[in-house]
Amino acid sequence: MTSSDLSAAGAGTWRFGGTLPVNRMGFGAMQLAGPGVFGPPADPDNAIAVLRRAVELGVNHIDTSDYYGPFVVNELIKQALHPYPSDLVIVTKVGARRSATGDWLPAMAPDELRQAVHDNIARLGVSAIDLVNLRVGGFAEPEPGSLAKEFQVLAELREQGLIKHLGVSNVSSEQLAEARSVAPVAQVQNAFNITNRRDDDLVDECAELGVAYVPFFPLGGAFQPMQTELLDGVARRHDASPRQIALAWLLARSPNLLLIPGTSSIGHLEQNIAAAGIELSEQDMTELDSL
Image (tube, rainbow, N blue to C red):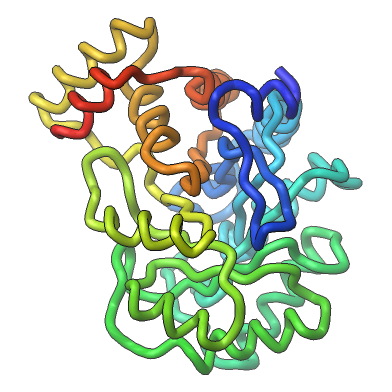
């Protein structure tokens, strides 16, 4: 499968900010770090092979961060893929850091945000980052509060040519509106999947605004027995796995949904990408929407 094959497989493409095209099935690189997204992987050669296979299969949207590892994942991406294919879009995020013991700590001061962007640029080996997300909120859901001051820092780096597009992660509709009052927003990255639909209205709002919505945790956690039974039934009709159906549902949910399922396994990577070719019927969607 090539990039053109993947975009034609039913998933289609999206343009960040109306200008930067990506296939809607991408790859999240977080799981390439060690346990707990901390330290190096047990098998760096395998991590490199996964990244190269993703690109071979048509992925041209990779999601990462310098705080994965920390630093480990970006260094693996550079080692595996640099010099990068001309159509490869690398998205990173800032707003956090790791302690010496692996704790996740906020890093939202202006100097921390600027340094994080420069560090991502250096470790990825690029002159500018395609898209930078400002990560706010709690572990998996938004928290109230203003992000204007922090987003303004990234907007200034965009004006300097160090960032091409901006995004926000773990935000509410109100915080998205606040960010858009500062600078154009090309992407929202929040938790959303077939069983966690808290952001249903925000997905639709982003679609109306021309903003990509990129779900993290696109496969969610373990499914409940009734959910598993329903997913199994749809999966059997398509000779697919329940997790492939969960990904296919996201692609069918809205054209602005872009997927970045992560894995450290080439086999799972291939299964995830194959989900882009699953065409769910109206009956499938009705059943899945009932979850």
